Image 1 (tube, rainbow, N blue to C red):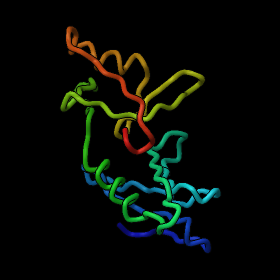
Image 2 (cartoon, helix red, strand yellow):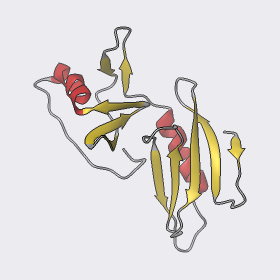
Image 3 (spheres, rainbow, N blue to C red):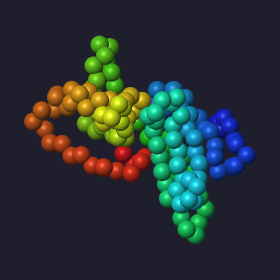
Length: 142
């Protein structure tokens, strides 16, 4: 995990991490101005990017190591892929996403793809008759 840039303020760093496909992903790690949370935001050049947040203990050190571990764990897994025909497929019965929006419409950041409601719906059609649970989680715990 090379650090590609360290600004003057050491609580703000740019770091690279590899995902399960061997692609390099760049994150900006910082202590939020309130000092209550550490945050890591993927730098994609677009509006959407993975985001992780961890609370900072009141009487302990900032959990930078735990934040990096969460990034690595999530990047080591993939839930959805596109086949050779461009169709989306769920790999293991689990889809973890971050909720975003594009042009005022909800969208979902799944792995490295931003999916629309229609694309999520097409993913689920092959599971017709099965149960579904939707659970809202904290950033990075999806």
